[in-house]
Length: 615
Image 1: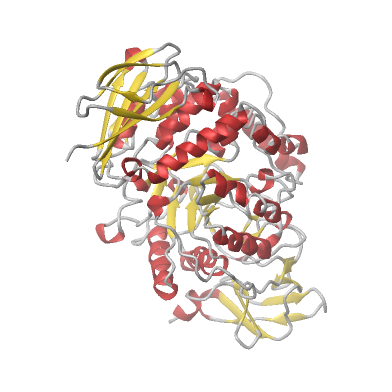
Image 2: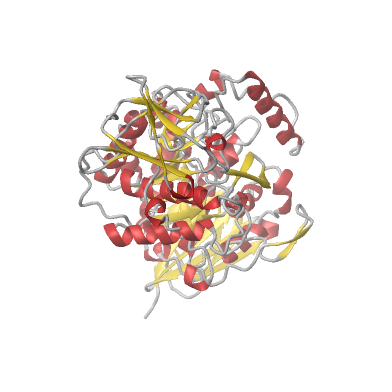
């Protein structure tokens, strides 16, 4: 039986060149399938096709029309591949012509991955309005900051109007309260005009609970495996070909129809697939095929906690072919080096020594024993360039998964904030910022949902309490269902004009300029790195070399002045940046030039020197 023509077509309602609607839905166990037209109340029967697909070509559907699917004599259900849920997850699907948008980004060329300076944002809290349209008005600010790639937290339709996005139930649909699919297209088009690449965070390891109808259409889920957040997606059990088609076509849709430049795939360690070809590898191969057709490169970035290079290894070498991965372990080592609590999974990390190891090896746990896990963990990451690893001093998870959602600005001193971001940018890895950190946002970023099911809402509250028990935290967590929890997580843009926030923002801008322009900092050869750690001083010295250029960074995590050595290779070292100086809201001035030998650096400071290597 040949069904290749179906597995290369997107599901849902799409329009052909003649303007007719092509309808396709996968329901392999149904005996009858109908599409119910919301405007006329007509019930059009779909035609059974091979392998459980149902299809129809019709003139009865037009953009903007509401519609439902009806399985046999059941209740009307939204389209599993709906592009727009104008009335939320419980309403009818709305016909949307995803090809109708008039793009103006024909000259846009995706940047090389090693050029990305990434800024993670949540559409609902990035602005007061919480829409794509409002976010577009902040693009000039991001350009001025030096950002050239933004990562948008998930926007697939979820229940209610506020959510982190990881409870989405319609992977093809764009959240109605953010503006819907056309607003996302407009936003991406605007980003490209400004020279900004767009990364979209997507979730292929589970679906949210409220409004989730996929299981009513077919075996999208399996009880062979379990995830912490819900039923596992069926990527390798009976009928999994139809499920794999659904998710592969979803990834291609974001690239092809929304001009997304890269996808960040959430928690891929929770994707269980023992097929001969892993679903990630299939997505990689299909993405490459799309690039061959369009000429536009697209990147695949994964979040995972396995310390397994198989994910970022090329497919021809037996890997899954992902372009890059997040490294939580760099964050954990950086956090404990700054003096923050070592509770929960942070207990596995030593101040200074773990951070120095992550600088050198990317993974802290690369085959060594983990006390937290009670077993050996990870593998060596040798031979992989630094741009395949993304690092950060904070992100949505490590802020929002704290009980009170405190940002770094509320946990460490102003001077330490500057040191932490300096530590990120001097690394041989790709940097990522979390919205608002660049001006020291003081509002928390807390976990929030808007489930309308009261029992589900209470289950979320109880689940948060259990999670924090592992960190031995006392007190009450903010109510994740409360609108107030959501509203107090919004950015306060007026802080940018106040001190010390303005000085911090200027410091970030300077650091980003150096990251983009200094040859030693744009080099992602991990072998061109030397790291020395001094645990008793709480100090790290990082050296980077490239193209005849040499930089030395002194990271003093202690609360006292510390002595460090500038290498003797050169006669003079030039100051490139010193976080302690008054220009950046500090109190200590560092001389413009220094000879090799001892130098005293201020407490909680990041000091960067440079020199041209003698030929």
